[in-house]
Image 1 (cartoon, helix red, strand yellow):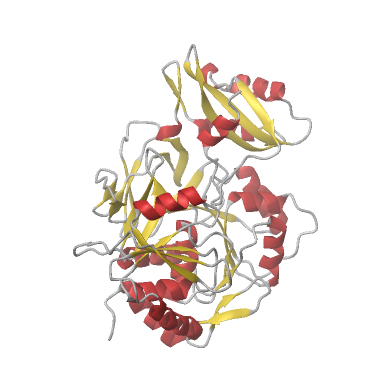
Image 2 (cartoon, one colour):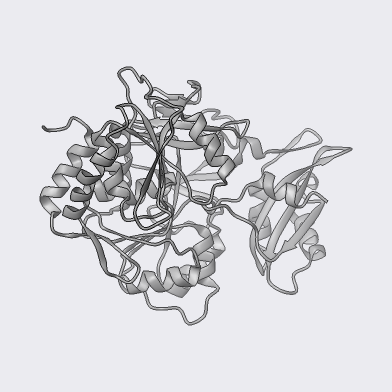
Length: 462
């Protein structure tokens, strides 16, 4: 019987066209799944999840496993909701997510074969007439986990907007090192394979040298990466040639102009900044990849409309209208932020002549004696100092001014805090100048390549 599910319908078309073609490769360039084998695995897996009723939530914590497409397709057919979980999350975080999202099952892959664990405390949820296909885990304002509800139509819309805006087709080969469990990986790797037949290499190796070697060995044409990888690639010696690579994408965290410039010089490839959110998928994309302004993310994606909330402010939130925007949060809703085809991110953007630039987040604003400091503006200034490779600016409690500005940088030997402070005083306003600048060997990031300013502030509290 023909399915009414948008992604399953797209998969049927992909299967007819690409049945015997390679779908998934390992990092040695060997074929691990054809499209037909994915279909066979999906049909087999349906029997293994027969104990779950329609509307049940099944968490999936399997890393970048080649069974990801088959598991997702089988869950779509059984009308089960998939909740992707990152492998690096703690057991406490996982238990909180399983409880909050009322999961009936957990799929893991500690061995080579995915294993199914039944969670007896939870039962299928009545979703009325808008049953989701996917729950994306995110954090609320209290840092407690919550999920975003997506139907297949919205996931397919995001896939279409990404592929058409970025020019990705079934002639490409995606290199998958970003986690499929993250929104970026799910939308740039998994759904393009299912809906458009874009094959991929799957990697679980996060060491930059290994990633670069595998990228060359597999002849991948598209690399959806993160700034942490591009920076590491730039610092390597004896790098392999990448003759097949034609598209480099950076998302998950701001890409510094210095890293983009150095990468272009070293690898003869531009990096395209991609700005998105778990709640609505892709938002902006730097199509030309020629802008050298810190925080520049380009123009809105195809079929995405951005409304500036406060046109009179130098930086404002934007309301994102898109067919890819989720239906809302779960278990509690927030209709002023997400729903009815729009999402209101916390990011603060400025509109330039050729696109948008991110200058910070509402929660990141530093209140210095009543004056608001955008961390991104101070970071951009620090990055102009010769030898500074990374900079993170954050607020710390102050007995006299409510908050004070502090920063940490990764810099070349010989760069001193005194030199950096003098450089800041030369051009920044007095309230923008950091009180302290810490020089670190590395700035910690999470699995998604993101830097949490609050975590950095706690680390450098003294």
